[in-house]
Image (cartoon, rainbow, N blue to C red):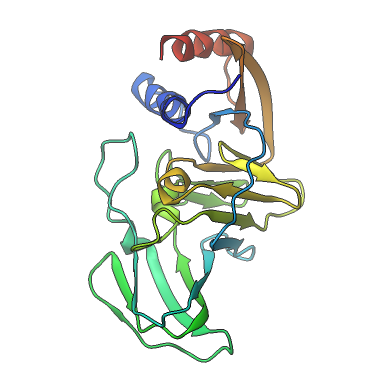
Length: 251
């Protein structure tokens, strides 16, 4: 038994907002737990590829690489959103982009222009194109993108640039993590350590929690959910899981 995407996304958003409202201790490096549906593998013919790597020397930066085909050679517009689904807060995430570059399949640089705080236009070359940008995330965050040596929280809208006109194009994500880290997300996984989304909206709506995570599972109306914990949260986990079950059932 599975839920629709709308129900899945509401479940993913509900818990972080609830924790924010009850004032769960923020001594943890990141949002200390996340809830995800366990989804079956879905095969998408991914047309966009996102890769993430972390600066493991300073833990202050992460680099995102986008690979895509541009057979027409048209100009391409890349944008960082100013919103996070379900958070109801304004944030200009383009301000976290501190470096941007574009090359064609031969490695030749492509001309580009920054049009605003959130938009970059690339003078497209024909064929495969590679876009690389560096983010300086918040060191501690319960929303947006957070990173330190113990883990990371990658909110979709604060991490992935949107390619205008390709919002419905299937997406594949790969993340390179240090030894001992686990990855939790609501996206469907593939063999080999990648995840897929039907398009940008689903990608933006499914955060990634990374680090030395622990987890517990709960089943509501025949649907399996998993709670992921980052850090040593001083809470009664069975009681917390029971509370979350009630919240999910009400949704």
